[in-house]
Length: 499
Image 1: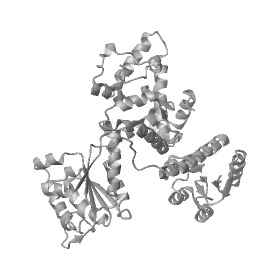
Image 2: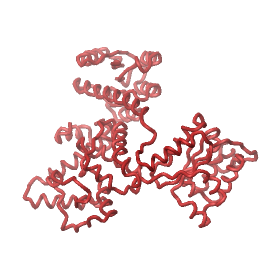
Image 3: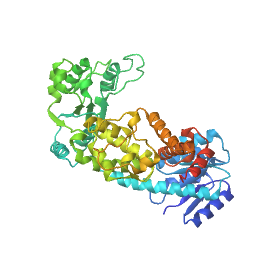
Image 4: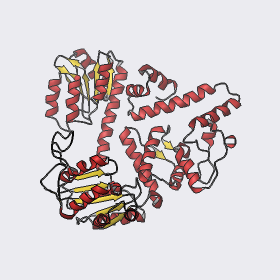
């Protein structure tokens, strides 16, 4: 294992940390100033560099914050713990803004300092595994016949520079397909430049696409290259092409015809060599009939059409995609990956997914943050999955408030998780306060006298777990984001049994 590097001008601090870490079988290397650390880093590599860097913030030989900035430039994934005897807000904020893993005020409790360093070691090792895993992550996933047709089309188009039009609903992965087409083409060594033509205001889109000359309009202080020039010898991805303003469609058609264009305010033609991949969720044939899209541009773009299926058309891919996104979310948040039960997968498999793959990815991220246990059950799924599923399939009608089963702790633990056809009560996505009131009423009706404590503990537990997941376990940062004190979150974690 690589050593823990300790940087402090105080010899006693270095000695105490060295001995404590060696007792934990963690090797160390010590420095008394930042200059020596930077020199050692410059001569090191991924194999013999530090596993974790622990640095004082104020030293005669330089600032720990300056060291932090330089270290992050060289090794962005290296966890850095900043120590200081000056426990002021500015130091803490500067440390976290600089990318510090944690902020350790002096004097510190030695066992807690060692625990923090060990957590940083685990984070560092997790990052290493994450990088290896990401390297082996497939570009796209899909076993459904509709997706296999897409994969075959990408393969057939790999040696061609022909223009491609990708159609499909929002969130179905059109940009992923465009990137795959570029990566497996003869232009793979060139740039891939993407622009969403619907997301840029009309008066700025022309400049974004074609660039502008200095003084072309107010605020144009320098010449700027547009996306066509940036993508020269590579691929330009025009997303949501169906929403492009009509007058700009004429300029685009001219570029596609001969590869020449003029920057805004320019007088000299610019030559570019790009492959165009366009995408839209619109019905372009209908847009042409409505006079909102040029027919000649439509035919110029519609050389090869590649239709991407909606997720509801490839339901057999939902389990595989769900597990993949749960793994990805866990890596991003620095937590252990969640597992999902077969019953929960049944619910997800029956859901309509109006937001397609992007919605499934967001749901998996939500589950990683919000599910308290490692195993995701049906009851843990976000409200819209149950409510919208029932609405879309009309299998059951939503009971009136007075008829709903109270969502109590007992009801949740005993709630059946078999098939979507069963009328499992789900909280209202737009009115969780109503469900809280129902829950409170049920507990009060049972004669209990600890309703406040019961519901408050559950509420606080969810908030704290979500904040810790979002900050990768950093308690101080979690407390700051929740708007509570460091001592408060430490006490609450102990009281709620969240250690």
